[in-house]
Amino acid sequence: MQKLKLISNSTNIDDFWSETLVWLRKDFLKVNNVILENLSNSVPLISQLSNYIFSAGGKRIRPLLTLASAKLCGYVGERHINLAAAIEFIHTATLLHDDVIDDSKFRRGRKSANTVWGNKSSILVGDYLLSKAFKLMIKDGSHECLEVLSDSSVKIAQGEILQLETEKNLNTTETNYMDVIEAKTGSLFSAASLVGAKISDVNESFESALKDYGKFIGLTFQIIDDTLDYNSKDSQLGKNVGDDFREGKVSLPIILGYKRSNKKEKKFWERVIIEGSINNADFRMAKEILNNYNVITDCFSKASNFALMAKDSIGIFDNSKEKQRLINLADVVAYRKN
Image: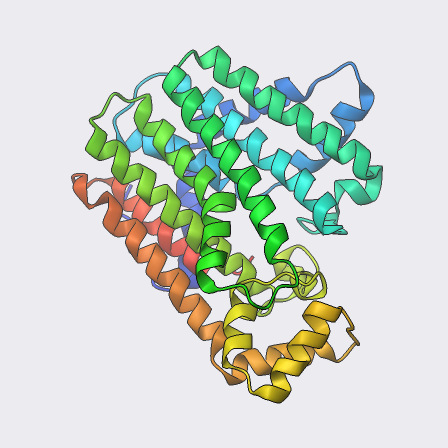
């Protein structure tokens, strides 16, 4: 297989995923089998709802980080399979809970689980998936990996609570926002990369490098996600564009947009975000203001900077195809359109 070229724009993203699926195909199949085995349940609702959310697909970036990090560290064995599945269970549980909190109607291009089965069912099945995740961690037998992933679960919950405090709050600072996404998103990305190193018995400097790599990939991912809500199409994003705006979420585009706005524009933001008084033309107006102040461009730039930091984090590793793939993954996350 030829050495991968650096991805400088979105044109090579499909090639990256094709190459990656070939590279990790056997591992991904094993992870998928573990997931399917653990979704089988005598309670019909658990099986139905779980299979519904997992069959919708998704990027599987978090388990990918575990598999790829283990490969980079020269790991030989099977422990990364159950751990990658556990990480995907944790992530999927948070999606189910998020959709209830946000009253989301769509997830990955189709009706969200809470729309189909209701909030109570979504919350309980989310709890079930978390339990399955911890069962897989116990099966692995590593106290270190259990500690890493349980700490991450705590941080995710803290991030969700911090985000509630920023909702409809236009005094939210960029620092507040970064605290939220580092806990809510960066922590699991970081943990996913770190456990791949933990099972490989590499020294602490390599563990630290992959921990940082995952964190910066997570920050890149979340900033792009929040920005695409103002710069994408429903068909690309897999959910309703503008949902964050309509829910009063104060994400990075809103923080920068409000800060740069004139008095009249600030009144607009206060009406739509704080008061929740939104008409059909408001989302178009919001995008116009953000573009006038180069907010979207600056958000993408900030995400790209974190992607660069992710690449720099793994500079300690010798050059290899495995390292190059992780470098390319940073570009893919930064340039993604959905």
